[in-house]
Length: 580
Image (cartoon, rainbow, N blue to C red):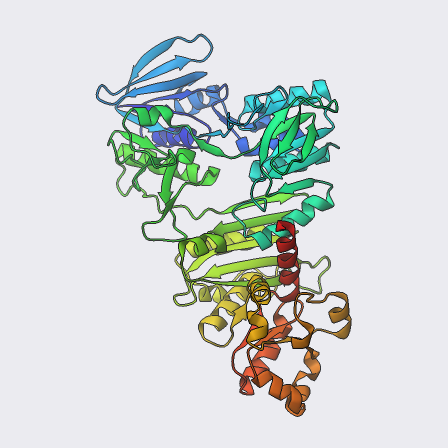
């Protein structure tokens, strides 16, 4: 049996290695159009910044190792340009000489990946000093430019993972960095208010953020910049000695579609759970170029997720099904677990966001909490800012997001595991996690997520998010409904960190420790509380929950806790101001 694999990197290389571990009889050939068969493309920004110092360490493996260990016939600088499905042949072009040859296959595996989006319609986008960052060759080009031009001003176009990572690394090299993003936030998988934490980190490091402002064009600089002046739609002009184009990616499937293999509207290959294309039983596909089941949503929902972890797993599954291994694995879908590190801060997420669900019209509940990454009494205890999105009826977890300086990815990994296992939001309260003061708490932040969700599902607690509150205030419904806002923080906290958008006439300060007595004895207050809904707030939501339960048990109706309270309110308010 002859298997041809188009593309190496993560998916192709893992497919070839797994095939060989399952059979010594298969003839396995890999064609890689670049000069490196398998490399850590997620590590490229860190090499430019100097955190990864050895070029060779970026290579996951090479031709010699793949041949010596797995007897794989690997060819670099060879681009597959056409597929003849009837004859089971591929046309392969040598990118150095231009020569084209044909090769026969029994099974064809497409690990073609994706390519950077470079919109040619934008004037001047191909000017010298502009770079994408997808390959080892791209990285070498950026490194040469830095060494020869010594740029001081860099404009990064795009605020996704690559854009953020390269921005961090260039700041660390002492460069002045601007990020231009057409959306109103960086890191699209996060919701706006969670991304605001990242906006704050970037600004604190001197990064100039230009949000909700797309690139309109590039021109020769009027102030002597060594690459271009970057023109924004707002009219802003940014001089740049180097431009990084991190505008997203698209699947490299032009020749695949030309062969009659079915693609989605966005150009991704359609496959089944064995990684076989729906168009041809002898053609398989995996990695960044395919569309898969969205396991966070379930049902028939699909999406395309360009991540290395899924690509590696898909390669293993693909190999097992090509060989016909008994009990061969099936792909269960992708939940999109992701993360980014920016200096001392980590932002991570899994599943879908609130804005995604809102766009789909799916019922959901969002809750926020601010829990410490380890025991509060142990040194360096700090908050993890978390958001959980779930179905309040069934408890299905749709997604989670977290930002903080320690323990962030651990909590998201736990919730990701729970999602893959089909656990509900309520089940999170019962997960038993490793505890000792240096790295956990007796009630972990994940447990707290489950407790809050369980209380909501049981009707013990109801919440309103800060964004919902601000929308009500703006729309006038907060006033017309005669809502009373109760702040149970200390007088000092109320003075120093006010809920500035809340109408003062509807705001009452009652410190938690005096709340029971005050509510029980103040007849005027009792009348006000009975006149409409009640929203209770504090700094994080913990004390507000205590006060809300007291009010509910005393017979007050329509009592809600401001989820995440002041800490989430502040980033929500800042995010809205940033949009204007």
